[in-house]
Image (cartoon, rainbow, N blue to C red; front, side, top):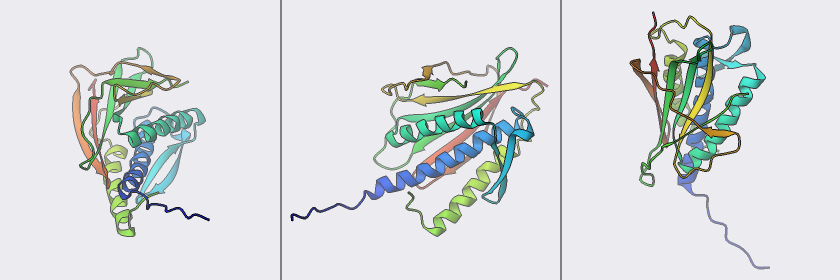
Length: 218
């Protein structure tokens, strides 16, 4: 019987895949944290999960959770391809639809293989194994703790008085095939708003910068 040599897995690919796991976990907790702490959904729609030395909130609303997970599954594919640059969580006034807050997560893959192509495909879907060592895991827990504190303690933001709804936008490369159920959309910007830059998450192969734009209506 002829034997077949099997090559070792690409270490760079393992690092990127492990790094993506951290990024997607961060985005999942961040989106849920925004929805809770900015009052998009009531407190009874969430349960507490202890992670990274913090009490983090996750939704029990099935429709909301399905929407978030659908978006993150697509984000995993696009991150693996290097075809996504930003994910944006937009909070809009439930009555007239004007944008109240805009949370921008900019994702970049670090390393010599990756450049910075043009990302001008703005998409949204309508809402209806890591190589890290134990020491790396501890460092990532500290990273997660630091960046999540900015989201779960938004004392720098004005109180949102009116009911809001949310949407998730993704900036994808212009060559990206638009998946079924997704549509091209506009940036949902805030004119003459305030803008704050928050702590960035640094993983073994990704940097996720975070900023929030808002309209101070007080």
